[in-house]
Length: 168
Image (cartoon, rainbow, N blue to C red; front, side):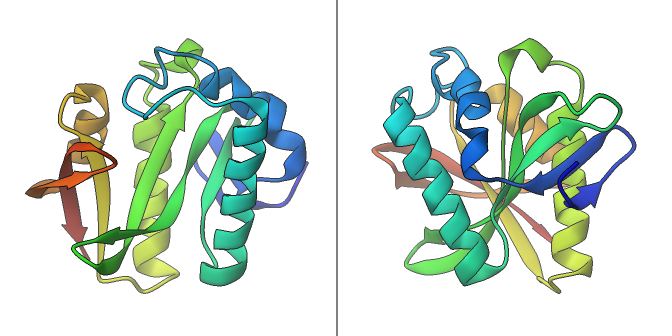
């Protein structure tokens, strides 16, 4: 098993690598899972996503991590901390995206809670955000469950986005 960044009761969050492209395509090729993204992603775009993530690890010490079932090692999705620009300022976002087959099991909330704790305790961040499409109610519920509140609405990625925030 690859070394992990975070361990919870049910999950391991580990660094993403190039071998994860096939796993990520389960999510990225699913139009329902990707409904709030600009579009689904091809294999080439997925490899670009992995490169972006590896660059985040290198340049920021954080990024999206692969979420796996702690007992079985089964791929569930991704969750982590990524830099995002909001109002021309770089902020750290808790991002999460899980395979549709595991929706409704609380994995996103469990992983996001662990990322929040990691950001505050290990990275000494004073605040973290989540950027949520105004129509993505399940994602908004995850942000709310981990103690985030809406700070503002912005226009990003060609649409209205809610900026959720939580402070240490």
